[in-house]
Amino acid sequence: MVKLGIIQTTSYKSNEQAIEKMVEILTKLGKRETEIICLPEQWLADSLISNLEQTFREFIKIAKEYSMTIIPGAFYGKRLGKYVIYSPVIGPNGEIIGEQRKIHPFDYENKLVQPGSKTVVFKTSCKFGIIICYDMVFAEVARSLTLKGAEVLFSPSRIVKTGIHPWHLYVTVRALENRIPILAANIESKRFGGKSTIVDLYEKDGIVIPRRVELNGQSAKSVDFDLSKYKEIRRKRFVDFRKFS
Image (cartoon, rainbow, N blue to C red; front, side, top):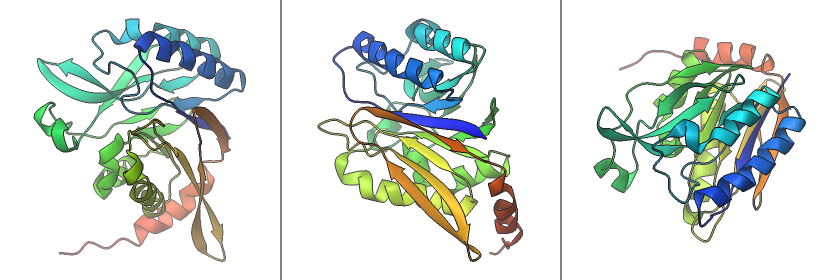
């Protein structure tokens, strides 16, 4: 069993205020032995991060203290002189172990950032992949991560209120398509609709059925997963796939 979770944030006037509150929540999750936790996309007041280690120094301390992997969200950053949107991963030893870049910038983001070009699977308490917000729309992203060995998918997201229903559909369908649980974190504010969701799957009479929970307000939820139960239904799903033109 592995305990996985998400945090739903609200909007804050400053990065310092936001991080201070998240430190409280992360500490509680650490004490509950949560092993991997994910926050939303661009939940900070200023989402351009110039010094990752400095900005998230308290997160790094918590990760190390509780042997917890923290996906602190997704942010703007500069790589080789160009702006990108990326999701860093803080490993259980308190080190930055890598990042997933946003492959499909949304709308205006196309004018601001360079898109990512590959999916990355990380391994700490389990093998996991990261799907940043709009990347969830494109089935190939989740499929690529699953075929590369991911056992669970996390999605730092920033979904407006009118987009919540289709977002939930996309997350649920990606879980069903790939026979994999997905934990998707969102912001709840005047503009963004919250309702972060965890999609689990169970089998009944040979049919795989999704089971989804939602978060309300600024809150966190962690769930125990037996990831081994997905292996066989995932194997059957990909064996059934046929190439076509």
